[in-house]
Image (cartoon, rainbow, N blue to C red):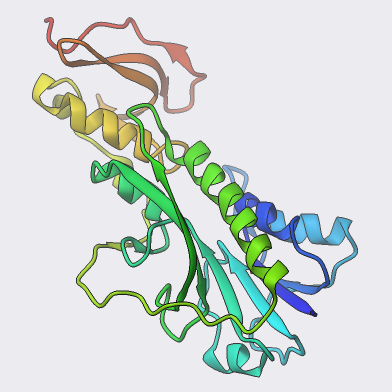
Length: 267
């Protein structure tokens, strides 16, 4: 089959590397990154060009494909584009759909105290993440998981599930998702990482803050303000009391440094 792949992140590449017969890649446009705002292409664009695979950033151009595959693309694929593909499209989504449809399911699951998450392969649909389910696999969430490695693990599993589905070949039918009210994983912003210093130092908030730190690692990160300066929490952990111990921090404009670890239960 001629496959067109839609993706933008390093997690997308975990799926892309498992595919054969990729005739083109569609990714988000290059954007300014970092303090110097250097225009930087997506990880998928960089990878595809090294493999001599054509890259497009305009989803509206007409495609000729047997199948579309999407993983961490970040944009809505037009219904007509899906319909024009001979066998439609498949999407790898890092949650147990229908729970946590949307852009940031992994941090939302950790933040909400979920004990498990998973990965789902669904058909591409008119609305985000509402297609028919072809395969799912569950994974426990531990008290030490952070979003970055957990998301990567889910896409690695998703790549294997997708490979099994493609090996069986079309048609890709699947089962409809349950009709129920489920939380939506809207995209986080940098400002969502803010916590007042008083709450960070409050032992009653320790479990919640630790959960938020793990959910927001590596991005957008957990940060606070002290004397009107931004202070980013780079490493912390819970003590048995329970309380929150800060291990490493970074003041705005400074290098990371150890924090004199003191339980918030002591004054």
